[in-house]
Image 1 (cartoon, rainbow, N blue to C red):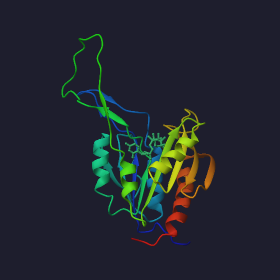
Image 2: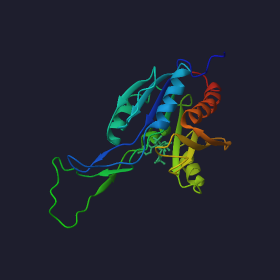
Image 3: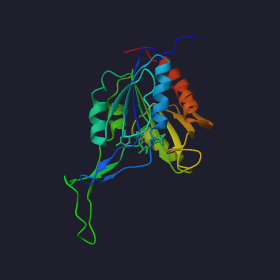
Image 4: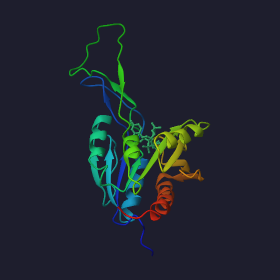
Length: 224
Ligand code: PMT
């Protein structure tokens, strides 16, 4: 069997949701289960890559050979990811990072007194974009885009604005694709415009197909 171009390379994968604290007992989050990111991390480790998996709160076992870093909020994920930016060869953002967080989370439990309350949200840093916009020509930045089925053009816009090497578009459907389910329907859009529509696959098989494309892209770059 031929050696993978990912053998010995350092890959950072983000996975799962983030939790953004409202107060000591409540948070804002989303339905990400971490399955897609964990499948990618496992498949990359099987290819001999040195994988660091930075994950929000999920109920999944760490894939064999993967170094796992558990975080809760987007700010924590950002801080953890930043420490790897310089030294990683490939950054894959499969996490559903909350775009906003409460501006001033209350330390203790908020009391149920007012009829209405307002929570001011502020923007979180975009972890993938930060890596991608500062990456060297020898590093790859891979993102995901979760959009409605008809909004694939938004995925293309994210590829452009974040200057990604590849974006995996998936759409939200409770039965076949996106959050929580064991399968996904990915469309892989490369920087060159090359587009590969994958059928409905298990998240493990979808991860394999994604890594095959990444192997081709990375194989054509010289190592750091
Ligand atoms: O975890 P599962 O239940 O298996 O579900 C998988 C998934 C649907 C979460 C995954 O396949 C997926 O699509 N992840 C990205 C979800 C998303 O909402 O992406 P986005 O369009 O908000 O962001 C685009 C890209 O930027 C993503 O790669 C994201 O990780 C990254 N990002 C976004 C915001 C932010 N503050 N920091 C980031 O790094």
